[in-house]
Amino acid sequence: MSGISDLEIYQRFNAIAEELDQLYARGPSLIGGTALTTAVRTLRGMAGAIYEHSLMVADDDSLPQ
Image (spheres, rainbow, N blue to C red):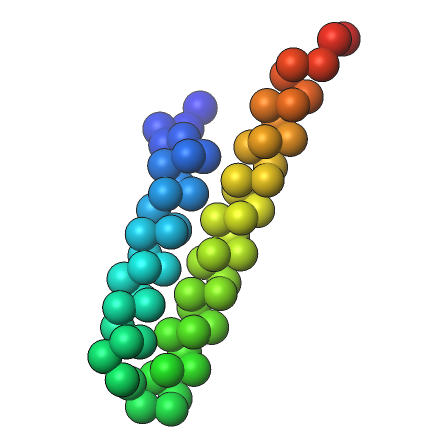
C-alpha cells in the first residue's frame, strides 16, 4: 500500500534530528535552541516508536498462530 518502509521513515527522522543537532551546536538564541531541542526530542521519540512497533510486528510474525 505504501511506497516507503517503516525503516526509511525511522532513518529519515534520525537524519533530520542529526541536522537539527548540528544547528543547535552553532549556538542559536534561547528561543531557537528551545525549539531545536524540542523538535529533536519529538523526532527521536517518533523514530523510537516506529522502531519499537516494527520490532513488535516482527516478533508477532514469528509467533506460531
